[in-house]
Length: 323
Image (cartoon, rainbow, N blue to C red; front, side, top):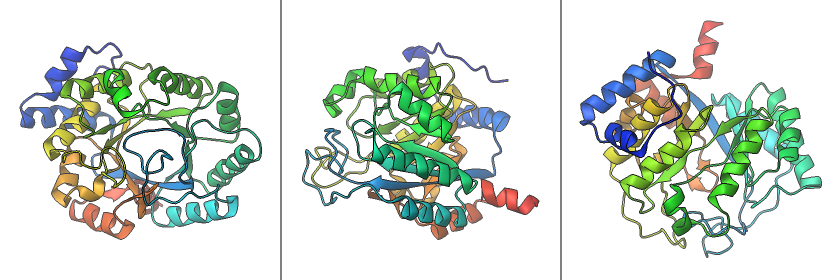
């Protein structure tokens, strides 16, 4: 039986991460099988409800107002269009619908009221509702919780030590405070990071330590591979080795046994074999739809084809088959 711990040291995490690959995968699979079904993954869809013009300077992000990218600034999407996207997501097999807005902090007033209506509407469709809207106060988190929000995404991105090389407009402690506000409001936490931004292996271990030592663990841990976008400071970053990515997924699975480990941004750059390795390493969720906010993503038919080859299914299809 896997022990759920919240006191991991960087040395312990590094030792697990650096195990011989077959041993690492075996351990990750053992933990995965104890807490999850191995033949199914959750489908999530992420919609950008307010795109571009963000005052943050995150070095990986094409939505930052600090960089000249091809992302055009758009105002907040109306509730009807958002719910239409949610219905389409449900029809394509997603059970979680995520709404992302390029804000530094969540604004009060009409815009926040619109988001509340979106959350209510998504829940009425029978979908899990997730938001990623930037920094969140405790009272705002409580209002989202009252509307039925399932999860709030706020990634830590990287280690506290490397963080300042990637973002200067928001502190690591501010990120942790948002997660604390979400947790206090009774909403589940979705928090992970981005691999391949020029960080060291130790930075990766420290990121995992920050996540795995939260009590409780984040219910959802997205592991993103950097998507290099022209115009951002990281556009020339060297490609991430697939095995480094798979090792992060396997290590996350071992450290956070019950969490959903989500295969997130950068999936388009992975071969079928690469994605299969990620599932074997313990990833049990994928983001579907043509885009992840503003970066390309495999289409739903492509995902179904791959899962079919592997004898796997999306959660909702398993549920449908049972009725």
